[in-house]
Length: 223
Length: 104
Image 1 (cartoon, rainbow over the protein chains, first blue to last red):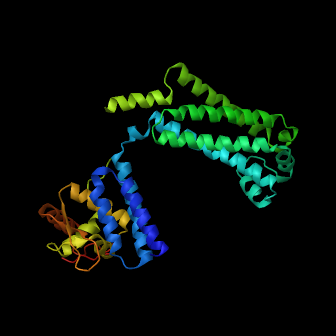
Image 2 (image 1 turned 60 degrees about the vertical axis):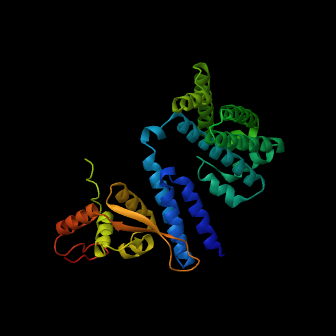
Image 3 (image 1 turned 45 degrees about the horizontal axis):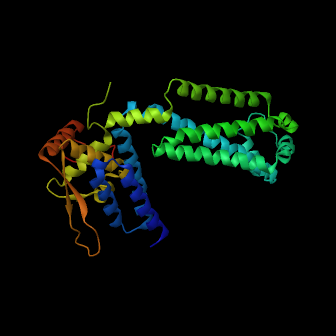
Protein backbone atom coordinates (compact mmCIF):
# COMPACT_ATOMS: atom_id res chain seq x y z
CA UNK A 1 0.00 0.00 0.00
CA UNK A 2 1.41 3.41 -0.94
CA UNK A 3 1.52 6.23 1.57
CA UNK A 4 -1.15 8.11 -0.41
CA UNK A 5 -3.47 5.13 -0.23
CA UNK A 6 -2.76 4.75 3.47
CA UNK A 7 -3.49 8.44 4.03
CA UNK A 8 -6.69 8.13 1.99
CA UNK A 9 -7.88 5.28 4.20
CA UNK A 10 -6.97 7.20 7.38
CA UNK A 11 -8.75 10.37 6.24
CA UNK A 12 -11.87 8.41 5.33
CA UNK A 13 -11.85 6.64 8.69
CA UNK A 14 -11.71 10.05 10.37
CA UNK A 15 -14.50 11.25 8.11
CA UNK A 16 -16.69 8.43 9.43
CA UNK A 17 -16.05 9.68 12.96
CA UNK A 18 -16.79 13.30 12.04
CA UNK A 19 -20.07 12.56 10.24
CA UNK A 20 -23.17 12.38 12.44
CA UNK A 21 -24.21 8.81 13.33
CA UNK A 22 -27.30 8.90 11.13
CA UNK A 23 -25.02 9.52 8.13
CA UNK A 24 -22.90 6.41 8.68
CA UNK A 25 -24.03 4.81 5.41
CA UNK A 26 -22.79 7.91 3.58
CA UNK A 27 -19.42 7.59 5.25
CA UNK A 28 -19.29 4.01 4.01
CA UNK A 29 -20.32 5.21 0.55
CA UNK A 30 -17.42 7.67 0.39
CA UNK A 31 -14.98 5.07 1.67
CA UNK A 32 -16.05 2.39 -0.81
CA UNK A 33 -16.04 4.86 -3.68
CA UNK A 34 -12.44 5.79 -2.94
CA UNK A 35 -11.46 2.15 -3.30
CA UNK A 36 -12.81 2.20 -6.84
CA UNK A 37 -10.53 5.09 -7.81
CA UNK A 38 -7.38 3.64 -9.31
CA UNK A 39 -5.19 6.74 -9.15
CA UNK A 40 -3.76 7.21 -5.63
CA UNK A 41 -3.57 11.01 -5.83
CA UNK A 42 -7.11 11.21 -7.14
CA UNK A 43 -8.28 8.92 -4.33
CA UNK A 44 -6.57 11.13 -1.78
CA UNK A 45 -8.27 14.21 -3.23
CA UNK A 46 -11.55 12.33 -3.02
CA UNK A 47 -10.88 11.52 0.64
CA UNK A 48 -10.00 15.11 1.52
CA UNK A 49 -13.15 16.33 -0.19
CA UNK A 50 -15.15 13.73 1.71
CA UNK A 51 -13.63 14.98 4.93
CA UNK A 52 -14.79 18.48 4.04
CA UNK A 53 -18.26 17.08 3.40
CA UNK A 54 -18.10 15.36 6.79
CA UNK A 55 -17.29 18.58 8.59
CA UNK A 56 -20.00 20.45 6.67
CA UNK A 57 -22.56 17.85 7.71
CA UNK A 58 -21.36 17.88 11.30
CA UNK A 59 -21.69 21.68 11.44
CA UNK A 60 -25.13 21.54 9.89
CA UNK A 61 -26.23 18.93 12.40
CA UNK A 62 -24.94 21.01 15.29
CA UNK A 63 -27.16 24.02 15.67
CA UNK A 64 -25.56 27.37 16.44
CA UNK A 65 -26.89 27.61 20.00
CA UNK A 66 -25.26 24.26 20.75
CA UNK A 67 -21.91 25.49 19.47
CA UNK A 68 -21.97 28.61 21.66
CA UNK A 69 -22.12 26.82 25.00
CA UNK A 70 -20.06 27.70 28.06
CA UNK A 71 -18.12 24.50 27.49
CA UNK A 72 -17.14 25.36 23.92
CA UNK A 73 -16.11 28.87 24.94
CA UNK A 74 -14.08 27.45 27.82
CA UNK A 75 -12.42 25.04 25.40
CA UNK A 76 -11.62 27.86 23.02
CA UNK A 77 -10.12 29.75 25.92
CA UNK A 78 -8.02 26.71 26.86
CA UNK A 79 -6.82 26.33 23.27
CA UNK A 80 -5.64 29.95 23.40
CA UNK A 81 -3.76 29.21 26.62
CA UNK A 82 -2.18 26.07 25.13
CA UNK A 83 -0.99 28.04 22.09
CA UNK A 84 0.17 30.99 24.17
CA UNK A 85 2.11 28.93 26.72
CA UNK A 86 3.65 26.76 23.98
CA UNK A 87 4.66 29.96 22.18
CA UNK A 88 6.29 31.38 25.31
CA UNK A 89 8.36 28.32 26.05
CA UNK A 90 9.15 27.91 22.33
CA UNK A 91 10.52 31.40 21.81
CA UNK A 92 12.53 31.30 25.06
CA UNK A 93 13.99 27.91 24.18
CA UNK A 94 14.79 28.95 20.60
CA UNK A 95 16.60 32.02 21.89
CA UNK A 96 18.46 30.06 24.54
CA UNK A 97 19.59 27.51 21.93
CA UNK A 98 20.55 30.37 19.57
CA UNK A 99 18.06 29.42 16.88
CA UNK A 100 17.97 33.04 15.80
CA UNK A 101 15.87 32.48 12.70
CA UNK A 102 13.16 30.61 14.61
CA UNK A 103 13.18 33.06 17.52
CA UNK A 104 13.02 36.09 15.20
CA UNK A 105 10.23 34.51 13.15
CA UNK A 106 8.24 33.88 16.33
CA UNK A 107 9.12 37.39 17.48
CA UNK A 108 7.04 38.81 14.61
CA UNK A 109 4.03 37.99 16.74
CA UNK A 110 5.37 39.97 19.70
CA UNK A 111 5.02 43.70 19.92
CA UNK A 112 8.48 45.35 19.82
CA UNK A 113 10.44 42.09 19.94
CA UNK A 114 14.20 42.38 19.51
CA UNK A 115 16.32 39.28 19.43
CA UNK A 116 19.42 40.97 20.87
CA UNK A 117 17.42 42.15 23.90
CA UNK A 118 15.77 38.79 24.36
CA UNK A 119 19.05 36.81 24.50
CA UNK A 120 20.13 38.04 27.98
CA UNK A 121 16.68 37.26 29.34
CA UNK A 122 16.64 33.74 27.87
CA UNK A 123 20.16 33.15 29.17
CA UNK A 124 19.16 34.31 32.65
CA UNK A 125 16.25 31.88 32.83
CA UNK A 126 17.08 28.85 34.97
CA UNK A 127 16.46 25.39 33.53
CA UNK A 128 13.80 24.84 36.18
CA UNK A 129 11.78 27.71 34.72
CA UNK A 130 11.82 26.06 31.30
CA UNK A 131 10.61 22.86 32.93
CA UNK A 132 7.86 24.78 34.72
CA UNK A 133 6.76 26.47 31.49
CA UNK A 134 6.76 23.09 29.75
CA UNK A 135 4.65 21.68 32.56
CA UNK A 136 2.18 24.53 32.05
CA UNK A 137 1.81 23.57 28.38
CA UNK A 138 1.27 19.93 29.34
CA UNK A 139 -1.33 20.86 31.99
CA UNK A 140 -3.28 23.10 29.61
CA UNK A 141 -3.20 20.31 27.02
CA UNK A 142 -4.39 17.80 29.61
CA UNK A 143 -7.19 20.20 30.58
CA UNK A 144 -8.23 20.49 26.94
CA UNK A 145 -8.17 16.73 26.45
CA UNK A 146 -10.21 16.15 29.60
CA UNK A 147 -12.63 18.84 28.54
CA UNK A 148 -13.09 17.14 25.17
CA UNK A 149 -13.87 13.92 27.02
CA UNK A 150 -16.29 15.80 29.29
CA UNK A 151 -14.31 14.93 32.41
CA UNK A 152 -14.89 17.22 35.44
CA UNK A 153 -11.15 17.11 36.24
CA UNK A 154 -10.61 19.48 33.28
CA UNK A 155 -11.43 22.45 35.50
CA UNK A 156 -8.89 21.44 38.16
CA UNK A 157 -6.22 20.90 35.50
CA UNK A 158 -6.97 24.31 34.03
CA UNK A 159 -6.75 26.04 37.43
CA UNK A 160 -3.44 24.28 38.18
CA UNK A 161 -2.05 25.33 34.83
CA UNK A 162 -3.08 28.96 35.35
CA UNK A 163 -1.54 28.96 38.83
CA UNK A 164 1.77 27.50 37.61
CA UNK A 165 1.72 29.90 34.70
CA UNK A 166 1.31 32.79 37.12
CA UNK A 167 4.19 31.49 39.24
CA UNK A 168 6.40 31.27 36.14
CA UNK A 169 5.47 34.80 35.09
CA UNK A 170 6.12 36.25 38.54
CA UNK A 171 9.51 34.54 38.53
CA UNK A 172 10.26 36.05 35.14
CA UNK A 173 9.34 39.50 36.46
CA UNK A 174 12.10 39.04 39.02
CA UNK A 175 14.72 38.63 36.29
CA UNK A 176 16.15 42.11 35.52
CA UNK A 177 16.67 41.30 31.81
CA UNK A 178 12.92 40.63 31.44
CA UNK A 179 12.18 44.35 31.66
CA UNK A 180 14.44 45.03 28.68
CA UNK A 181 13.31 41.98 26.74
CA UNK A 182 9.62 42.83 26.49
CA UNK A 183 7.79 46.11 26.15
CA UNK A 184 5.78 47.50 29.11
CA UNK A 185 2.58 47.15 27.01
CA UNK A 186 3.28 43.46 26.60
CA UNK A 187 3.83 43.01 30.31
CA UNK A 188 0.58 44.86 31.00
CA UNK A 189 -1.31 42.65 28.58
CA UNK A 190 -0.06 39.50 30.33
CA UNK A 191 -1.02 40.96 33.70
CA UNK A 192 -4.52 41.91 32.52
CA UNK A 193 -4.93 38.43 31.04
CA UNK A 194 -4.09 36.84 34.39
CA UNK A 195 -6.41 39.16 36.29
CA UNK A 196 -9.27 38.47 33.86
CA UNK A 197 -8.70 34.72 34.01
CA UNK A 198 -8.54 34.72 37.79
CA UNK A 199 -11.67 36.88 37.92
CA UNK A 200 -13.69 34.59 35.66
CA UNK A 201 -12.50 31.45 37.46
CA UNK A 202 -13.34 32.97 40.84
CA UNK A 203 -16.76 34.06 39.61
CA UNK A 204 -17.45 30.55 38.34
CA UNK A 205 -16.43 29.07 41.67
CA UNK A 206 -18.29 31.72 43.69
CA UNK A 207 -21.49 31.17 41.70
CA UNK A 208 -21.06 27.40 41.98
CA UNK A 209 -20.92 27.19 38.22
CA UNK A 210 -17.52 25.73 37.54
CA UNK A 211 -17.35 24.12 34.08
CA UNK A 212 -17.64 20.63 35.55
CA UNK A 213 -20.93 21.55 37.21
CA UNK A 214 -22.21 23.09 34.02
CA UNK A 215 -21.29 19.89 32.24
CA UNK A 216 -23.06 17.78 34.82
CA UNK A 217 -26.21 19.89 34.48
CA UNK A 218 -26.07 19.56 30.71
CA UNK A 219 -25.61 15.81 30.98
CA UNK A 220 -28.52 15.66 33.41
CA UNK A 221 -30.81 17.50 31.01
CA UNK A 222 -29.85 15.10 28.23
CA UNK A 223 -30.79 12.11 30.33
CA UNK B 1 -33.79 36.46 2.85
CA UNK B 2 -32.91 32.79 2.46
CA UNK B 3 -32.45 31.17 -0.92
CA UNK B 4 -35.08 28.64 -2.02
CA UNK B 5 -33.98 25.01 -1.63
CA UNK B 6 -32.08 23.31 -4.48
CA UNK B 7 -31.46 26.63 -6.21
CA UNK B 8 -27.66 26.49 -6.22
CA UNK B 9 -25.70 26.11 -9.42
CA UNK B 10 -24.14 22.91 -8.10
CA UNK B 11 -27.56 21.37 -7.45
CA UNK B 12 -28.63 22.36 -10.96
CA UNK B 13 -25.53 20.67 -12.36
CA UNK B 14 -26.15 17.52 -10.39
CA UNK B 15 -29.82 17.31 -11.31
CA UNK B 16 -28.96 17.95 -14.93
CA UNK B 17 -26.43 15.12 -14.85
CA UNK B 18 -28.98 12.78 -13.28
CA UNK B 19 -31.49 13.78 -15.92
CA UNK B 20 -29.13 12.68 -18.68
CA UNK B 21 -29.76 9.03 -17.75
CA UNK B 22 -32.88 9.14 -15.59
CA UNK B 23 -33.33 5.37 -15.22
CA UNK B 24 -29.67 4.46 -14.67
CA UNK B 25 -28.06 3.94 -11.28
CA UNK B 26 -24.94 6.12 -11.10
CA UNK B 27 -22.11 6.10 -8.61
CA UNK B 28 -20.59 9.13 -6.89
CA UNK B 29 -17.28 9.23 -8.75
CA UNK B 30 -19.03 9.12 -12.10
CA UNK B 31 -21.32 11.98 -11.09
CA UNK B 32 -18.34 13.95 -9.77
CA UNK B 33 -16.49 13.57 -13.08
CA UNK B 34 -19.53 14.46 -15.10
CA UNK B 35 -20.44 17.55 -13.13
CA UNK B 36 -16.94 18.64 -12.17
CA UNK B 37 -18.03 18.77 -8.53
CA UNK B 38 -15.55 17.73 -5.85
CA UNK B 39 -16.58 15.05 -3.39
CA UNK B 40 -16.79 17.71 -0.68
CA UNK B 41 -19.57 19.44 -2.60
CA UNK B 42 -21.16 16.41 -4.21
CA UNK B 43 -21.89 14.32 -1.12
CA UNK B 44 -23.68 17.02 0.90
CA UNK B 45 -25.86 17.61 -2.18
CA UNK B 46 -26.58 13.90 -2.58
CA UNK B 47 -27.47 13.66 1.11
CA UNK B 48 -29.75 16.67 0.88
CA UNK B 49 -31.53 15.41 -2.25
CA UNK B 50 -31.92 11.98 -0.68
CA UNK B 51 -33.37 13.52 2.52
CA UNK B 52 -35.88 15.44 0.39
CA UNK B 53 -36.98 12.28 -1.41
CA UNK B 54 -35.59 13.51 -4.72
CA UNK B 55 -32.95 10.79 -4.96
CA UNK B 56 -32.95 7.03 -4.47
CA UNK B 57 -29.80 5.40 -3.14
CA UNK B 58 -28.86 1.74 -2.94
CA UNK B 59 -25.84 -0.49 -2.55
CA UNK B 60 -24.76 -2.51 -5.54
CA UNK B 61 -22.18 -5.27 -5.70
CA UNK B 62 -19.23 -4.42 -7.88
CA UNK B 63 -18.63 -6.34 -11.12
CA UNK B 64 -14.90 -6.07 -10.54
CA UNK B 65 -13.38 -8.77 -8.39
CA UNK B 66 -11.86 -7.59 -5.13
CA UNK B 67 -13.71 -4.30 -5.23
CA UNK B 68 -16.27 -3.42 -2.54
CA UNK B 69 -19.94 -2.66 -3.23
CA UNK B 70 -20.82 0.84 -4.36
CA UNK B 71 -23.46 3.32 -3.33
CA UNK B 72 -25.54 4.10 -6.41
CA UNK B 73 -27.94 6.95 -7.04
CA UNK B 74 -30.94 7.55 -9.25
CA UNK B 75 -33.48 10.38 -9.27
CA UNK B 76 -36.97 9.65 -7.98
CA UNK B 77 -40.05 10.78 -9.86
CA UNK B 78 -40.07 13.97 -7.80
CA UNK B 79 -36.38 14.46 -8.50
CA UNK B 80 -36.92 14.05 -12.22
CA UNK B 81 -39.79 16.52 -12.13
CA UNK B 82 -37.61 19.07 -10.37
CA UNK B 83 -34.73 18.47 -12.79
CA UNK B 84 -37.05 18.96 -15.76
CA UNK B 85 -38.50 22.07 -14.20
CA UNK B 86 -35.02 23.48 -13.67
CA UNK B 87 -34.05 22.62 -17.22
CA UNK B 88 -37.08 24.47 -18.53
CA UNK B 89 -36.23 27.48 -16.35
CA UNK B 90 -32.63 27.45 -17.58
CA UNK B 91 -33.83 28.05 -21.12
CA UNK B 92 -33.04 26.31 -24.40
CA UNK B 93 -29.26 26.62 -23.97
CA UNK B 94 -29.34 24.86 -20.60
CA UNK B 95 -26.48 25.37 -18.19
CA UNK B 96 -24.05 26.90 -20.64
CA UNK B 97 -22.08 28.59 -17.91
CA UNK B 98 -21.66 25.34 -16.05
CA UNK B 99 -19.64 22.30 -16.91
CA UNK B 100 -22.62 20.53 -18.38
CA UNK B 101 -24.47 21.73 -21.41
CA UNK B 102 -27.94 20.31 -21.05
CA UNK B 103 -29.75 20.22 -24.31
CA UNK B 104 -33.53 20.19 -24.60
